[in-house]
Image 1 (cartoon, rainbow, N blue to C red):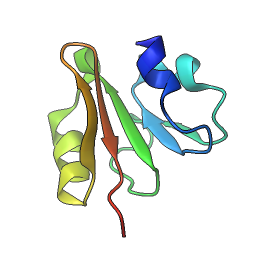
Image 2: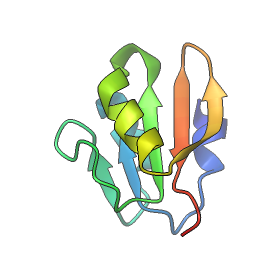
Image 3: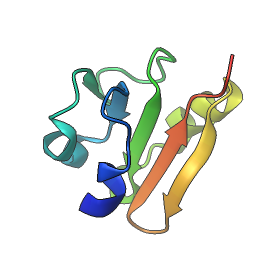
Length: 83
């Protein structure tokens, strides 16, 4: 998991599942999904599979986010589409 999270660009804004927050705390902008639901103002959304909210995932997909990395059972990372 750590290696995958290190591939996120350093200047990217993130919205992440609770267990991921500490792993990406070096980023300037980090939100926790439970408090920042499907806000589309971030570059990447990182779901920890045990905490995956399928409704929130669907909202992101419907607003132009695409799957960037999918490590089944561990992480799902969505990337904001080009505008």
